Amino acid sequence: MDITKEVTATVPLEEGEFQISLYSNSADEKEHLALTMGDIHGGEGILVRIHSECFTGDTLGSRRCDCNAQLHQALQMISGEGRGVLIYLRQEGRGIGLRNKLHTYNLQDQGYDTVDANLMLGRKADERNYEMAGSILREFGISSVRLLTNNPNKVQGLQDDGIAVTKRVPLQTTPTDKNRHYLKTKLERLHHELDLAKDQNEREMHEGVLTDLRRRIRNLTEQDGNAKPVVTLSYAQSLDGSISLTPDEPYPISTTESMVLTHGLRALHDAILVGVGTVLADDPQLTVRLEDGMNPRPVIVDTHLRTPLESQLLTARSLKPIIATGKNVAEDKIGRFRDIGTTVLQLPVTDEERVSLPDLLKELPEQDIHSVMVEGGARIITSFFNEHLADLLVLTLAPMIMGGFRGVGELNGTMKASLPKLVNHQYRQINDDLILWGDLHRGEP
Image (tube, rainbow, N blue to C red; front, side):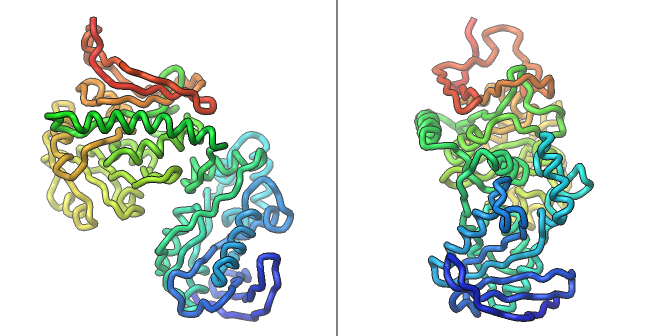
């Protein structure tokens, strides 16, 4: 992209004195800006914020969003370091323009979130790109940055344009009653890395649950003769047992606070396991974004190797997944996955054309995996119940009736003695949800 610096001037702001440069470009008719402080030319690991224009937030101080707070917090952080860049891109309303953005406000007032409002106007959830930002940074001779953002797509967009992001620096603002739903949509629909736990009491409740589960996992791992990883089933369901409205469409059931707990639970495990149906329907990241801790290694159960090569689990993570597939999958197909660093395990397949889960669990310790968290989907959850392979259950129960797709299908056992039973269980209310957890055993007559 060809860009031209038209003019540079000094602007004294509340956060300090910045140089502001205006750029024209060959791709659009908009004038983009860069606010700089200190000696940044040719620097590595420069602190950078890429901020998209928000007239209602940045100029009017609207409380519908967190844009104004993020803008000034970023300027403060750059000023605190004494050098950095804030690039101001004229991409109003996540790229759909001010007119459309105001139309989405009316739709939001009718109960739709920001993503659905955009889609109802025939636009994408997010139409921004970051090529202009990359061009401006190259003009300054900057090839690597620490990026001030909560948006993983912004990190990926900048890296796709050739600028290395050595670190993502969180830009957390305090939620308000006016923007909490907006931030929740960022978290749940756009996968922003936000922590919306309301207060310290909630964090203490989370830690109480996680401490008990950490103890249970450790005790099971240390048991003699434990030849397979410790397996924890974890999922959310409605009062009538639904996990989504339809099999192919994910639906947010649990509250944000419960999601924070789920991310903490992920960090307790070496791996996180899902079926390929979850990957195809949701394209999840399966990372620990809302709590401190290491990301677990993804394990995908995919009998016919249908996982898309462009899925986030393969492209957006440094820790590549393990894919468990059938023995009859073609070698050239497997080779495409191994070429990008994915471990592919070829395993026996059952009569129902499913990867043998017992064989998979036997293989995982060879991959240095000694604890696994299973998040879904329904077929995977049901299989773990039927084959008595799970050690722990963490169930989030949401106070709603959905009449949708059930999380647990038909179980093999017809006698009470063969049905799974939760023992040594505990429960805790977190916001509107009830969290129930304990040890899984066969029921007794």
